[in-house]
Image (tube, rainbow, N blue to C red; front, side, top):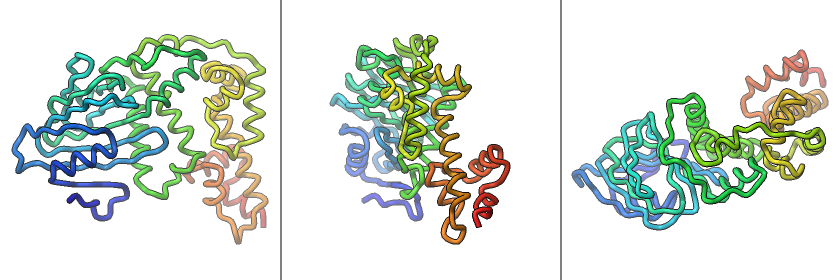
Length: 327
């Protein structure tokens, strides 16, 4: 049987049983067939999986060459990002080879065969629920697109934007390894999940990519309404999508409106409002019963150093000074 790695922060598993490897991957990802292409005595599989909302991220390695067959249609889009080694697959009649410079994207509406997962290759598996990606695209466009999204099977990781997207995935994966991570707070992970999905739609090739890059025509009323919603509920897990939906505009239109009128994104404005509320709480708190960390975390600020720097820039004093002034 596989064991959780000693001292590991997240669900880290290691097994030398092909049957258990099939079970572990089926629970986290999809039912599949596993075929050993290398020596059976060398078989081993290591897996660390985290999940937040509609996104599952896995760091997976096989010790010997294997192939995987997935017959069932899947209710998710899947991105394979090799961190080391390579992976060959067949999807929708196309032969794909994923390397650290080229990821593979698999659609939910066709069978998938990993023809060769090379021994010791380490891959980042990113599974995103189909409905979450489809809804995000519809919100960005402001209209109903043809679904499922016809992603190109290959995603170059050598462009800066694609590298940024992979770094965001890795950061989420590392942070989520800790069960009590602040990343699991809805104030934090809702916007991050939206950013990761929007990022995929912006860096991957698909028929709607040019439309996403086209300029939107914002109206001042939508921006004012969104600002009112933010001011009224900064404690809520707001995202650009939820704001755009309540303001009856597309996500792109709302983004462009904020950029033109305020010089920042809706989420940047939300951070400013939360920073003001955190400052208010610091100035009114009892220092013997409240801490800078607890107040920062209350308003969704996960990195205390960046919170302190932003607070001092805006208010001319550190959070500790503001809390001390409350005395």
